[in-house]
Length: 107
Image (cartoon, rainbow, N blue to C red; front, side, top):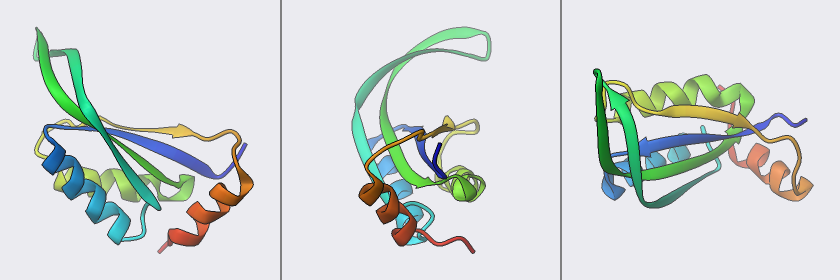
């Protein structure tokens, strides 16, 4: 088990995902942001089955920074209930995991 994680975020557009990714990486809360998409989503919202297009954003960070990342995403996101979930990285390339530590800062 490592001290690293991926934070998965969905955004309404490529532009919104880039805005969020830039803000989080510039603040050194994540080492990298990958924008993936477009993606098709099917979900329940306010009692109705919805479908729509979104863009996925993956943020590479440390577990100790997840709360900060969530707060930053919520501040930048257009949705009242944005998808922001962290997934632990159990193992990986030690050099890459070290790079995440080097490029992020815990306040």
